[in-house]
Image (cartoon, rainbow, N blue to C red; front, side, top):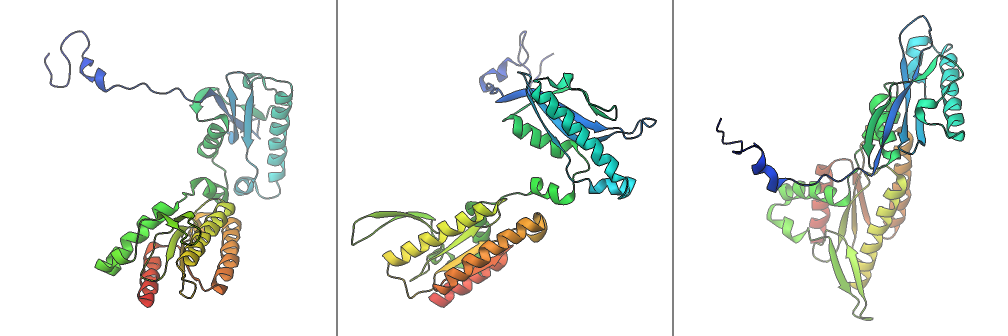
Length: 306
């Protein structure tokens, strides 16, 4: 049968050969299994409370549910203690197996209420990466706040700047070109001749500003990004003698419901402390969790310095 989508001859897909590429081998290959509880021996119901991932050399790692709050809906607060004992028994059995250098299919438990599911093959970037992915994909009783950490999507400076620039173009029109610049440039110190590589993306006439992201999982990353951005602006102001002009730092925040409250509070505290310090030096520091209000404040700041 002739077809426009098949090659003539014994291999009907020969025409695709020039476009084929070798698929790189995964950095990690191994097996995995669910860690399950069967609290009632007379019931077939089982609960997945963790996963274990084993390498081809027999070593393995595991991750178990730590917060059992969702089990309170099934058993009540008083009876969750029994579930906790079973989770502890699972942990002790797995740790003992690791110490004795047993493979996953050799792991014994002290109670028949704890068992491993069927072994399945898996692969990925690393054992830890596969373990983390499977834990969130397979374990249904993970508390909502813990799952937020996994579902959180970081936004780097480049992504945030594109989002804000789209809004700023809409607000500023043709004046956008006099405000936004390419973020990376080398600036030479006329006195020493030394070149400084700086990164900031706003430069209306006579001043400078920076749009940065605080949408990161870890407060440390947020703080380092903040310090780097403010340092570059201060360096530029010194080189260009802009000390009397108001520098601007515009920060995209994570939404409050995108991460656990404790992590959000830590990020807010860091930004509050650093912002206060910069405001004492004449900075205008603005933070919002959306691009539109950031763009509006940038337009007002740039118009005021014109």
